[in-house]
Length: 127
Image (cartoon, rainbow, N blue to C red; front, side, top):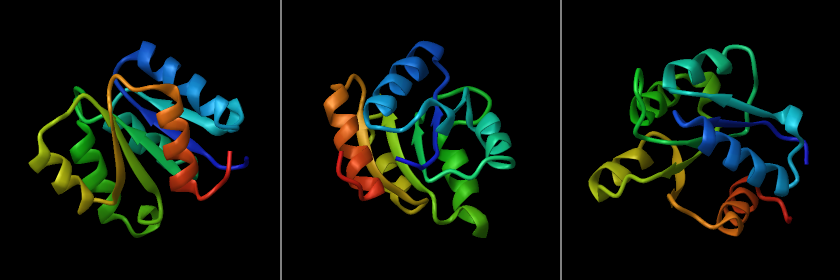
């Protein structure tokens, strides 16, 4: 599958685990990009076109909500699908994220198959 995915999470261990699942979904490693917070993710987006962002909400420097808000404000990034992958359970916050382009949310911890299904659904491909 030829699409680019950006994984944004402050935990290197979780980024590695999510990367393994994304590869299981058929996306090659050279199409997977990582960032440790929203600020780093914005920097990645300056040089890489992505189709999907897998986004944690609770991070230092710039959290996922601020990142999604900034993405949503940019015309060149409005097409990018955002999926929350977080421990966040505040329904009000998760609902607010929809106004920033979030299409799905997955609560940590998750089963790899759940994330694979979401990737397939959001990207519109059959795995």
